[in-house]
Structures are given as structure tokens and as C-alpha cells.
Image 1 (tube, rainbow, N blue to C red):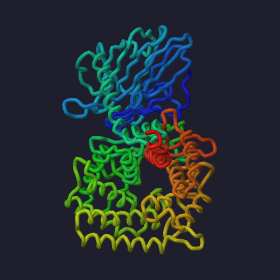
Image 2 (image 1 turned 90 degrees about the vertical axis):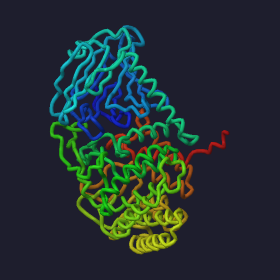
Image 3 (image 1 turned 120 degrees about the horizontal axis):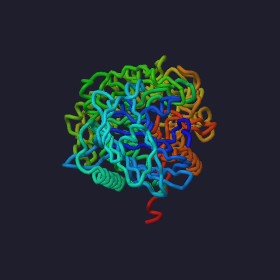
Image 4 (image 1 turned 135 degrees about the vertical axis):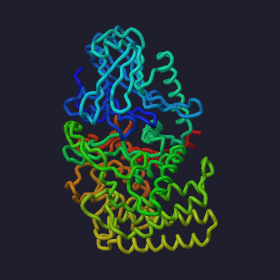
Length: 597
């Protein structure tokens, strides 16, 4: 079975410390250590024609087919490989995650179990990690039951009951019994590997199924929502609470466009949408950890400007460079490391800090509710929103060569002041209620005056320009304007007319730093679906939602972008924005549980 060209038919596994993307044939083609923004020791996905370098693959002699599914309601992937003579193996892939000794066990480790399930399969193992962003293969040392991979300052150790010599020589051999592989920290594996890895798999399965059991899901599209929710949780770096925008870097937004960006960082905006969606499902554990991360970011800012993104550890300087040894996805470089957007001015972040934090003043389910000290810190964020609401920025689409007063950013600044007034009322601080309500009203009047273009009968993307931007549809979601307001209806009509492409939506049609957009932006399509629902076009919204679900990978996920002519997915994967859209639209459009109870 020849190796196909890279595609985004990928399935993630992970444990909120480490993650991996597995291709249709069961090969691990992307995984970074010791965390999501680390060196991709498995980098085949971005290694151009050198697809067998930076991969961990099991392959049968005369292999003819591969099929996959997740163990129900888990992040454990099962791949079945079959050969021409009917022999077959099943591979169970997971990253251990479960409570042990009073804390969450989530090592920098990947576990794989190979089980012969038919005939007498002969299998070759290719385990070829790289280091230095694809610069060179790693050196190895080995013992009787382990191989050490010198991937960097901290080596990784493969402990296994498979024949080590066959692995080192990449020689085919007959698989006559279950084989267990644990690639993790460079320390002796304690206990019987068969028993320990099987116990880890069972405990990991129980963890995920119990987590899913606590979700409040809609009646319809349950599997799609569950799979999106698990993938969103995998995008959280639990140690700090940060949530990355995607698990990859530099999958092009469109073929050959050079719109290749590193998304392995925590955007304040993307994370706001992620916790908002998971809140709707009742997954408060993600919110609570993220609020801890936010408090540290706000503390570090000391009342000053907050960046649009940070590393998962809260590092502010994310210098952008290129991985010269990686050719890129299908050879479409560059592969970027870091993201220059960290230095941009994006004023929407203030509202996106205040809104999730405001919940902590009201929600009595939380282990740590917010108090007056938190309110004092949050007012500093609100002060920045007030100062910046009418100042130019790069906007949520992160234009690199122009700045304007973007309507979306101004509305987010309004939301910061509006929600602070709500919190002040909860804390019975009447003077602060009046203070923040007055500021919110002032911003509202400015937006209604400066962003409304009477000639076009719609809000514009900025105070200076009347071009249209899909983010204007968020004005209703943010409660800035009612969906019944004629101004929203006419803005929606203009956006649909200018930006809709069949069942898909552009974020904007105007040329940017790289020319005219060539692909639809998936979250904008979901915003279109939400807007259709808000204006009463429910049947159309449901049809469009079903159409979008038809574009998901076999693992039920989406990347950032989609070619609206061919239907092919582009952009980083799995993309949190897009998964948020699945969850939000399913909740809006589903029939109620009362229909079956």
C-alpha cells in the first residue's frame, strides 16, 4: 500500500500535555514535545516528499486497506490494517490521561497497542523521529526492551515487548501476540508493560467517557458535538490553562498562498469562543483552568496593553521565523515558527477577557468564584477597553500592513464595559454600575454614528471603510443589537449578498496583504448559519449546517478554511473556531429533548 500525499484526514489523540495527529493509515505524522508548541519530532505532515522521515507507522506486508474509528466517547483511536491475504491487526492509539495518586496523570507520552485480529499478519514498524524542526534524524541507543531517542535535552524512551532488533532495522516480522509500545520520558518503565499499558488504556477510556457523560448536549447531532468537544479539550494545555488555536503550524489557508501561520499559541479571542462553546455544554473544567491563565496574563500586563496572543506558558515574545528544513504541507512552504501577530494591536481582546471572567462572579458551580479583588483587576482591563475603543488596530483578521478602527473591536470594547456594569450590579457597587453603563453607552453611540453607512444601509467593517466583514454578524450574539433591528437585518442582507459563496462564507472579499481571499473561512459559515436562524430562516440554516457537517473529516473535525468550489479543507487543524461553530449551531438548531422525553 503506497503512502498517499498528505491530507487533513487526520485524527487527534492527546492528554492536554502532548498531542498527536494520526493519518488514515495509522501513522503518527505530527506530534511536538514536550508540549504543543515544541519541536515536532513527528513532522511528516510538513516534510514534503520525505514523508517517511518524522513518522511512526505500522505497515503490513501487501497491505490493501485501513479503516478507523474512535472508542465511543473517548480520544482513543482504533485503526484496522488489512493485507491482501486477509490477515489484519488493530492499533489502539492514546495518550494516557487519568487520575492517579490524587492528581491527573498526563505524561509526555504516546501509547500504542497492536493486536493481531485475523490470519498471520507480517508487519514493519517505522519509528523515525526528527529533531530541530526536521533538521536531522535523531540518534538512538538501545537496550533489550527499549530504544532511546535523543530528541533534545530530554531524550524519549520507547519501552516495548516487540522485538527491538526488528524495529531498529525496520524489518518485517510476524505478529503473533499483542504488542505494546510506550514512547515517553527517558526513565525505566516500571512494571509489566503489557499489564501497565492495558491498565492505562482502560483508565484513559474511563476518564474520557466520564468527562463526556457530564456534558449537556443537544438531542440532535450528538456524535458531532461530542467529537468537537473532545477535540477542543485536547487543545487546552492543562498545566497553565491556555487554549491553542490549533495543534499545527503552517497548513496553508489556500494552495500556494503562503498564508501559512503558526497556530500553536493561545489567542485571547479564539479561547473566548472556545470556553463560551464548552460552557454551553457544561464543561466548566476548561473554563476554570483558562480563567487561571487569564488572571496571570492580566497580572503581567499591570494595567497596560494586552497582546492578542501568548505562548501556552504566558510568554509574550513569539518571534516569527521559518523552519528551513521542512518543505511544508504538500511542499507548500514556508513552515513558520512563532507568530508576528503577538506584536500587533488588537483591541477586541479586552472584551474577550472580561466576558468569560464575568461568569465567575455569577456561577456558583465554580470551585473558585471571583471576588472584589478580581473586580479591581478586571476594571483595569475595562479601562484599557475604554481608552482603545476608538483607536486603530489590526482587527481580528490580523491585517499586517494597515490599521483602522474596526467595528468588531469597538463592539468588543463596548461589551467589556457593559459586562463590567453587570458585575458591579452583582457586587452591589452602584457607583461603578453607573460609571460603566455610561461608558458603554458612549461607545455604543460612537459605533452607531461612525460605523453605520446610510448609503449602503449597513454597518461597515471599520469607522473608515464601508466594506463588509462577516464579524459584523457577531453584533447580535454580543447583544449589541437585536436580531430584529432593521439595521442588523439590512447588514445581514448586505453581507449575505457580498460574502456568501453557495453554502459557504468569506470573512471578507476585499484584497488584503496577500491578495483576494481564495477560500471560505469555516467559522464565518457557522456565523452565517446562526444569523439565518436568528432571522427565522430555520430550514435553510439546518440545510446549511448539514452541508457543513458533510465536509468534516472522518474523525468529525474541521480545519480553518474550505475551498468552496472543491470542498477540500485547508488551514491549520483541528481549528478551535470551526469546532466551536459545530457546537454552537447544533445547540441552536437541534430539536428539544422534550420531544423524546
